[in-house]
Length: 193
Ligand SMILES: [Zn+2]
Image (cartoon, rainbow, N blue to C red; front, top):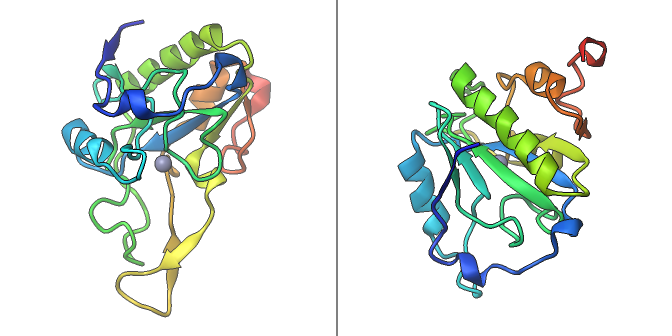
């Protein structure tokens, strides 16, 4: 598979780990308009260590795939599950730009086939590279916290909804041996595999 290497400026400051410690893939969407906006967020320094938040891989709508962080570095892409996981980000609007508005919680942008095909290729590539890779899950299943809505302090909205209801779990799960440990993917039909 064709991987474009675009390592983050602070990549070498991220904590190292053995590849054998990785057992989980976390699927995200950027909830941003495009890859360059995602890059600006990724490069932002947020921690005393001189690092910030990003996934390991970014897949654009046309399927082109970039690697921003090496597999043996711990990226900050999800609360409490970074150490043993790889973060894969799909470029998709999600709720952009009204993430926490109570009436903008349903994403409308579909995931193009080119992007999902590239994701399936990346998952099988990683399954070969990582001896203990076993599980896959959506970010929304690992972070179910709620925050006060922007527009009404009496309401709460989900902090994370990615990759969201339009993500084709059925197609992805038919094409991998990984086990889905999330509840949002439970609707896919395992018998079709
Ligand atoms: Zn996410």
